[in-house]
Length: 257
Image 1 (cartoon, rainbow, N blue to C red):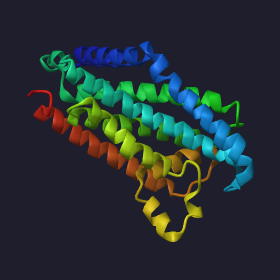
Image 2 (image 1 turned 45 degrees about the vertical axis):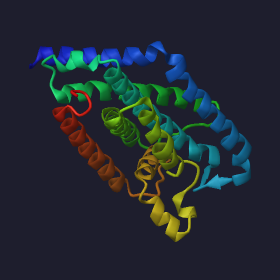
Image 3 (image 1 turned 90 degrees about the vertical axis):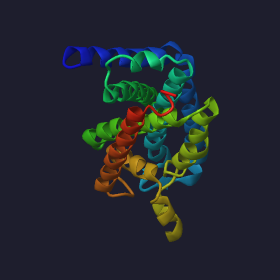
């Protein structure tokens, strides 16, 4: 396959993925908006005034970037993990496998759907945040690049989860026991500089900390992590996960048994 057939295959996969989550928007888009609104009310309006300023900014303004990126992370990951495993479970993935569609294009189609959902939910959460905070943008290029790269990264991670999962329980284990704790400990609600030295060192082992700080830099112009390190980590994980996923697809792990 080359040229137009590749484009048609990618467009078809992407359209299928986008249609899938938009048809059930009450389950895919609305819940994260409601959840994040509660964070804004509880942490921003109720607890924020007691905390005061954080890194020279109002506490609500400080947590908004992290909450937006958290919604992008969780929805990008969940969309691909659940969609790909469902295709395995229903054996509909076999229709793609018997076609001449290359592995990299299958991966790109699913990742594109995850990115689309992550960005859509992120935009919706951003719109809600305007009722609670006067958003300012320090660097548009950093803001857009970080959110897109992060959505790509966690879509790839969701694909890995979908490939390795052998039951629907396996799809939910990683978000519940790995992704959620790392996200909450990624500096959304606090600056890592507030922690003792030992816990600062532990926090620096959390990759989500780098992404949230880079995204916060795009809004507020502040970051606990050098921006270059954040981009290096994101690109490194994208390259590693892409390689792993293409290898799993080439082996047909869990889909050609």
